[in-house]
Image (cartoon, rainbow, N blue to C red; front, side, top):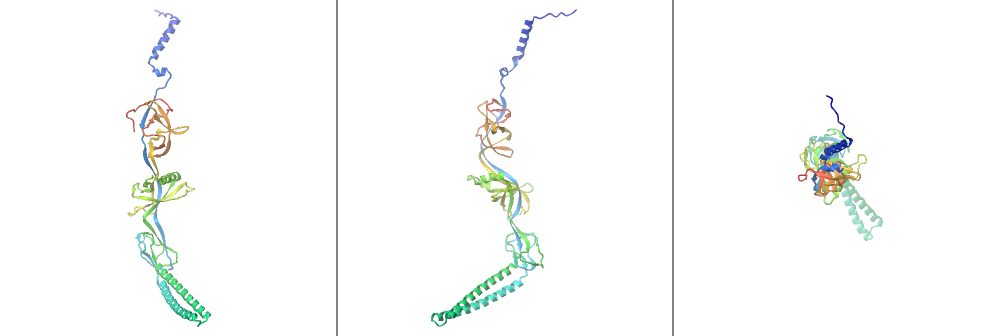
Length: 380
């Protein structure tokens, strides 16, 4: 049997369609019916101020506190080497002996010359005393008086020259013993025994290794921050300290003292040279060694350390979002410092107790409604 389809009046069909639409839309949120957006879910953390010391780490080279080229000061035959190469020597210790005989002869000659000059001076002085007395009684002529005076002055000058020559001979004889001017490690000999050497010829070198110095350079921006911290009246003494990192990554036990900051910036590298001095009694630091050094770049008081991802950029610069009441956020401009150990330093713009939005802030705007998902157990 064929199925019959009964026609539905047009007015009734429209009514049924409207009823069906109303029934389907009855489960939609009230806010969506009104055209609004739901509050954005965010995570917040309370911030608190702290004092922060910012360290920088830089490549460095170890050098002796004093590196002295030991040179001969007189000429002669090198007779003897009195030290072991590569060992420690003391200040004043004789390292080399140059043949002293020619200088001993010069010294004896100088002593004899001084004796002659002193004898002639005594005679000239005696003659001057006699003639000057006679001159006062008009018993000798002025010419004799002036001659005696001239002889006396000449004799005195001869004594002075003879004494200077004696001192020079004594010094030259002393210089036949080539001594170390500092405590340190002696290098290898440059000239072997038996050679005729000339004054000024380098014989070896001595490097003072205790204390020892570490030379390094830091970028000009870090140097500016360091200098600012150094000039701050409230700065800690730690600003003047340095820590050495040995090649194996361990930290050297002794803390160094910064004793030089170059007042100029190197135009080629844009860096500032610095130097620190360390005690080196155990000889762990070796001249020429490549290490790293850690120094204070800056000190900051009452600043905030936050996650770098909490910072966004606006047309006016860096900003963060903080809770403004219970359900809104405020865009807060901030002044940023460096990133230290993976955390962003905020110099100004925040206050202790602020609830900082740390998640969900990407699409936020100033004054936006939010729903705090960790209210009551937020991070601090």
